[in-house]
Image (cartoon, rainbow, N blue to C red; front, side, top):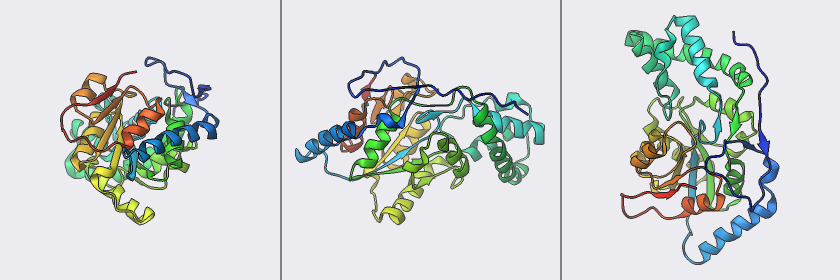
Length: 299
């Protein structure tokens, strides 16, 4: 059993006029920095654009979790590794697969397939493995030395939540309980009444429709595909958005390189989410008519 190490949470203040270094290490930003005057400024800018006819639409904004909003220092991978090794004697070398943008059931299926486990056994094992994984996940979260929120996330979430025509949700490969555990550490769950999760479908392409249906039940609004915005850090996030004809805002805060994300052709590509006004403008902008070309913000 892994020993519990102190969780190192790095924080710094962010002034409204502060500039972000594109190469700066991601850190947490204390929620208190999302000050009312900053939000009022951002909303005033957005409403000014709306009065000019640039933005006058509603948006369902769906956030990925891992490497988009937070980095968990491999807590999920370690928990999965422990379960599969201790209960199924799966060699750790089979666990070195790319996980970005995949659902938890998909990840487990790939690992077990690589270890030559028969498919019928895999199907039976996955629900048990997920339960065992969740039993260990909190322990691994506590043991993480680099469990952080990425730059700009707190302020962006506050700005979206304060906007009358924007609605927040999750779209993540995590099963729901795991997603909530990861966000709870930073009090981020309060922003997300709804979500679509790996526990809803092993196929990430199914999840936008799940989120839209839940938004209809919760908000009483039927969002069209071009009113849905998916924010994520991986090629799979981009493909998920494209599969639903939704807008994708890709952010280069994860393991996927800028070049890989650029080749996947999201509508927008940001180095980080630290420029709140530009991200808000991207969310509210109409879908580009052309299917080629990405709006890039490398700084």
